[in-house]
Image (tube, rainbow over all chains, first blue to last red; front, side, top):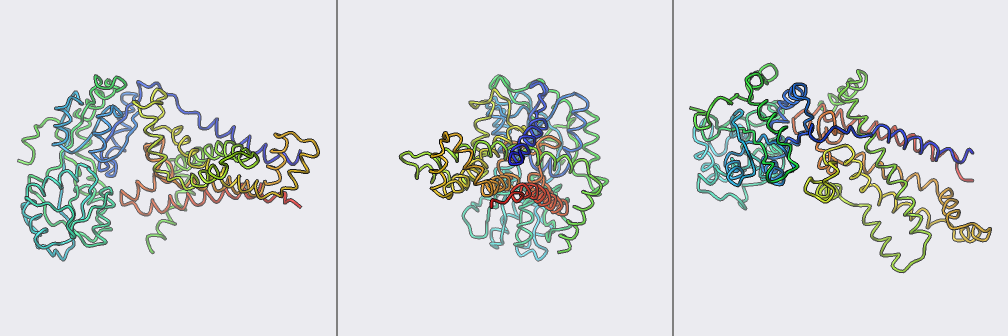
Amino acid sequence: MNRNRPLLLLAVALAACLAWSAPEYAAAERNIILATTTSTQDSGLLDVLIPAFEKKTGYFVKTIAVGSGQAMAMGRKGEADVLLVHSPEAERVFMAEGFGTGRRLVMHNDFIIVGPAADRAGIAGMKSAVGAFRKIAASQALFMSRGDSSGTDAKEKAIWRAAGIKPEGQKWYQETGLGMGQTLNVASEKQGYTLSDRGTYLALKKRLDLTIQVQGDRGLLNIYHVIEVNPEKWPKVNAAGAKAFAAFVTAPDTQAVIGAFGVDKLGSHLFFPDAEKREEDLGR
Amino acid sequence: MELILDGLRKAFWLLVTMDPEVFGITLLSLKVSGLATLISTVVGISLGALVALARFPGKRIVVGLVNTGMGLPPVVVGLFVSILLWRSGPLGFLGMLYTPAAMVVAQAVIATPIVMGISIAALQQLPQKLTLQVLALGATKPQLARILTKEARLPLLAAVMAGFGGVISEVGASIMVGGNIKGYSRVLTTATVMETGRGNFETAIALGVILLLLAYAVNLVLTHIQQRERPR
C-alpha cells in the first residue's frame, strides 16, 4: 500500500493537470490570428487595442508578434488572418501577388538614427538619412543592423540602397538578427549607430547610452497598414474576423485611442492615427 | 547590481500582491510543463524499460540516438511541431497551433528523450543477478519491468526532475508553437523574453526569480517523494 503512494500521487497530479489543461475550445470562426510586428507589441499598444476589440466583437485574437517579413510570410501561407505591418514596399508586392484582399493605412510614427553621443561619424542634426548613412560608411563607424527582415530592417536596407552603398560584409557593419529592443541594447553596449523606430527607443531610453542623431527626414516615416489575408488562396483564413479587425483599427474611436497612446507614460505621442489620410500625404 | 535588487523587490511585490496576470502566467507554466513532464514520464520510462530490458540487434544505436535526443534543441522541436500544426500542414485540421495544448506537445517531445535516456541508464545499472532472481521466481516480463522500475526509483525520479527542468526553462519551442499570447499561451519564459525586449528589465528579472522559485517548489515535492523511502 505504502509503496504505491508515489504512483498514486503521480496519477492525481496527472488528473489535475488534465482537468486544468482542458483547452478552451472556442469555435474556430471566433478565433483570429493577427501577425504583427514586435514594435506594436513592445510599445504596449496592442495590450490596449486587443482587449477592446475582443470585448466589442467577441472574437478571440491570437497575436503573434514577429518581424514584418515573417508576418507577411505567414500571410502568404494562410497561417494568419490579418496583418498589422510596416514594410510598405514589401506590402505592395504582397498585394500585387493577390495575397491580400484589403490594405488600409492605420497610423505612422517615425524612424530615427541613434548613436553614441561622441558621434564619430559626425551626423548629429543632419536632415537627410541617406546623407547620414553615407557619412557613417565613409567614417567606418560601427553600425548595428537588425538583419531580420523586419519592417525596420527593410527601411534600413532601402536607405543603404538609396545611398548607393553595399554595407553587407563590411567590418563596421554588424547584423544582430534580434528584435529592436535587443538591437538597441547591443548598439548601446558597443557604442554603434542603429536605425530604430522612435517608440521602442523612447521606451528603452533610460537604459541606453545612445542619443538621437538624425530625425525628421520624410524618408524616415514608419507607416503601418492593416492587411486582410485573401481567403481565396487559403480557405481556412477567417475573412470575417480579419474584416472586423481591420474595421476596428481604422474606426474613429480606435484611432483616437492610438493617437493618445503613450502620452501619459512616456510624455510623447508614439503613433499618429492616419486612417482618414492618404499615404502620399503623410509627413507633408 | 541595483537593477537586480529592483528585480528581486519587484518579484517579492508581485508574489505578495498575487498579481493576477503574473499568477496566471505562473499557473500556465506549471500546467503546461507539468503535463508535458507527466506524458514524458509515462512514455519515457515505459520505452526506457523496453529498451533497457530487451535484447535486440542495434540496441547501441538506439541508445545512442536516445542519448542524442536528450540534447534536442527546443527551437528545432518548435519548428517541426509548428510545421506539422500549420493550417496547411498535415495536422492543421486540429487547429492546435498557438494553443497551450501545442506547447504541451512540443515540451513532451523535448522531455521524453531526457526521461528515457536516464531511465535506460538507471535500469541498466541494476545488478544483473536481480533480474535473474526475479525471473527464477517465475515473474512474467511485465512483472519484471515493474519490480525493476521500483528498484530504480531514485534515479528514475531524477529522470523526471531532469525532464521537468528541461521544459520549464525552455523558451524556443514555447514561443514558436504557443505564440506568447497574452492571457492565453504566455508562460514565464516567453514573458521574460518579451519584457526584456520591452526594456522592462525589473519585470524580466522578477519573472526569472518566480520561475526559479516555481522550479524549486516542484523539485522539492519530487525530492520529497524520492527520498521518503530509501532502499535499504
